[in-house]
Image (cartoon, rainbow, N blue to C red; front, side, top):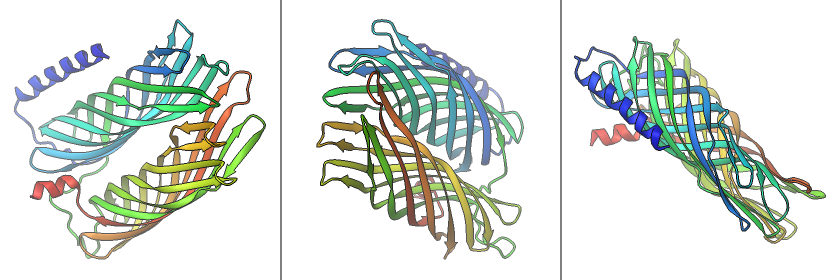
Amino acid sequence: MKNIRIIFGLLLAVCATSALAQPAPVYNWTGFYIGVHGGYLSGENKVLNFLDTSTVKPDGAFGGVQIGYWAPLSANWLYGFEADLSFSDADGFESVNGITTRFDRFGTARTRIGYANGQWLFFASGGVAWARISSENIPSSLGTLNTKQGFKGWTAGAGVEYALSQRWSVRAEYLYADFGKNSVNLLGDITELEPSFSLVRVGLNYRLGDVPRSAPQMQTRSAFNWTGGYIGVHGGYASGDQSMTFLAGTVLFEPKGGFGGVQGGFNWQFASNLVLGIESDISFGKIEGNFDAGCCVVKIDRFGTARLRAGYAINNALFYGTGGIAWAKTDNQYFFSLITSDRPFIGWTAGAGVEYAFSPMWSIKAEYLRFEFGDNKSDYVGLTPFDERAHYDLFRIGLNYRASVFEILARR
């Protein structure tokens, strides 16, 4: 990890020197973009239980895709948002116990702030990270443990981007991600996993369209224009099905409850009535399910998404479909706490909604989302696997203000 930081720091210094030594040609960075990336990952996975503490150090190549936008704050400063998905062959082997760890796939949803100097753009970013990680041959009192589960944490980093043309740009970037701790207590056998990684990657982006440098204009050819950033609040109700399978049976739950949260995103209206958007949100609440008078309890206290939106605008009304990545932080207790699980679900979400602008800067929306989460599995060799699965239906309403936090701060 130290070598990765040194290499990236030298690269950034060389790029900065080159950019500041030359006159800056005019270039407009604002707008939506899509792209591809590839790079190298160096990570750690600390494995802790009462038998031993081990550290596995996976490394390897990865590649993936990203989508995001940049919007102006001033002549040189920009703010933006980006979501990405990567697939990896990074793995590692710990020689004492023979533990292996593999980062199967991972992604981020990050807010970005940048400084543009002509064709050069220097940026920092931070946000949420998630990963699907497999570990095998973990020693435990119940036998060798093989596990595949989701992890959620935070990420931060910095990078530099160079515009090859008004549409195409290349970039180099460093990111660090920390996923905290996942723990499973199975009949007194407690196993904790603490993964993290550093990565360097290069990418190629294609900018889809221009975004006005001024504040959103509310009337364009007598039609409402949805282009621009927004922030907002929401509230709603969730219900679903969740299951836990162990030994001879499966326990079924029907969790439900209310929630509230915040969201932010950006829309780009093109071809008169078509709208493309990107949105991220986080929600807090009490979504809970009980089985057999409190014997078993499942809880979700927070969850979030990073999604694309595609819609059709009829003046002040926007009808859209949406889909992307979903995560949920769980706190599950089974058989009067003989078995506990504190690990997030990672999966996908899809849905639809309608939004109506009732003033130049304010809009309301109603939305349905379906969450489908993959399994969190711990396979103790010789025992039936301990497996958790879930899906949820969410209904929510929201209120949006057509400006970003950065824009509001810049006006002060």
